[in-house]
Length: 263
Image (cartoon, rainbow, N blue to C red; front, side, top):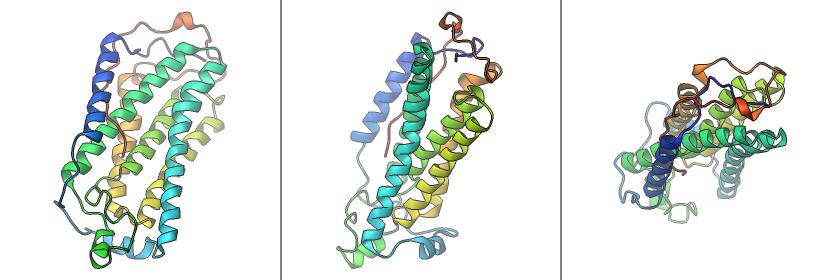
């Protein structure tokens, strides 16, 4: 399988911009301080009703659900970054395709992480469980961890970024042979992303609106950035007729990228 020559590759300037954006994301993650008090507290619209219906009351169940959200998130990230971006192209003896997909993944994930991290630290929305923690400090082991980092849900934004990447990649490169298998990869990734967001609500770490905003942010970034800077410039690679010659890799202009880091 091979990269369509019409799709711009990342060129030297793109590498610089990606490196700078990743550095910025790391700085936002590790050096931008968490807010010490909330700028926004409580639910809006349907938040309180969704919390009442969905959150787990038992602390052990909440912990298990939070672990499940980590698993579904990690599964999505590994699918697009390791399986699709590295393993399949390398098994097809195409390291240049692996390089291009890995760079797209890096720029897209980093941009999502940068935006989500800056947003939740600036917005400083109080997490839903903090109200209960005020009445009982033993209510939850996470009572004192990231109390004001609720909006948006970066678990949801990252899981949906991975889903967007998976869907746009499989729509343009038939990594699984084309047709139903590539469609199934997109659907599976969307289901895991939705499960990640739902688990964050059940685990009482986010309001529903936190998750919906994270999902919208992540899916937009995950799908639109690769499409805008690469895939819109040429048709999808035909199913089962993919040129494996690395000599045909494009020498098109720079693929622009901005990036960030994760929650």
